[in-house]
Image 1 (cartoon, rainbow, N blue to C red):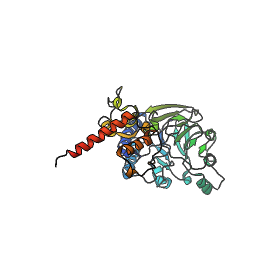
Image 2 (tube, helix red, strand yellow):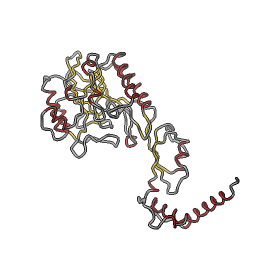
Image 3 (cartoon, rainbow, N blue to C red):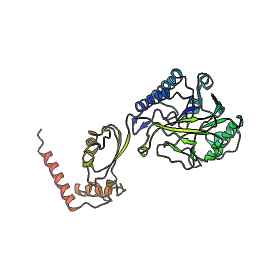
Image 4 (tube, rainbow, N blue to C red):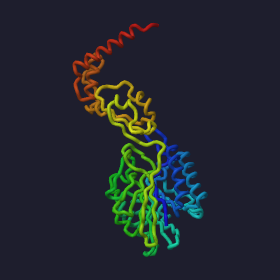
Length: 382
């Protein structure tokens, strides 16, 4: 049996004030084309379909369009679970009706029954382990579960009790496996409690399709995998490779996994250097239209740095000036600022931002600039 494992689409994501719906639509067109070419027996989406519980209209429309093409045009069943960004009740609405059309959406704990698909070697049980807080598992399943590890173990035991032990099984879970590599764009699964789970929970399964961590990676075993997010959703992910897993499951339950990359409309990149060097433009064929974070190493102020750089890189989303914030203290001078001269005010500001005293040369340059400014104001014609 061949199936595609993907996760963390985060439809409706806003990245540093920029809506990513068009970027997501671009890469999902490639995903649909891959489904057409690969002809999988199923598509598995392991949570965080949306970026928030109440997604914007355009995100809902995009998901409807993608799922409709996969189901109606290519007759490929889809199994997807809720992640910690999704609303389980909203996502799982109409599950029984949709399942008859091949769309299996598992949102709540009441929908934990395995989805059974068949190939020439027999049945394969896809076990949906939708995201649920430990407190909810305790309440709904009437068991003791003080953390995510115990909660997920209870869910696994509940579903496996209904499945014959000698059949092929695939787990679909949205969880943080201990030892996984995380990034800043992932919302914590818990605050103040243990959110990690042990990979040994998935030992009964031939393959585990994981969601939550955005970096494509193994998690405690070659057959326990995070597919990674659809796109790069933070600058901390700029060096990560994004894609999807195409999984082949043979009659013995052995798996072969191929990761296939998708091409984003714009990459996410970090530029680090001095202003004059960055003005030379992109190197080695890199695109000017990528989403960019700039780290400027200049110690001197740069007039309208963002405006000048945006003429070359129109999608600059963030600029850092670490050498201008070395002092780390933004409190004002102890004296009344109204009694300070322009030079004294600037010297105090310069010291707070850089952690250094204004040099004699810098002081003279500042005085010259201020004098020229006042002269220009005096000579303005009205």
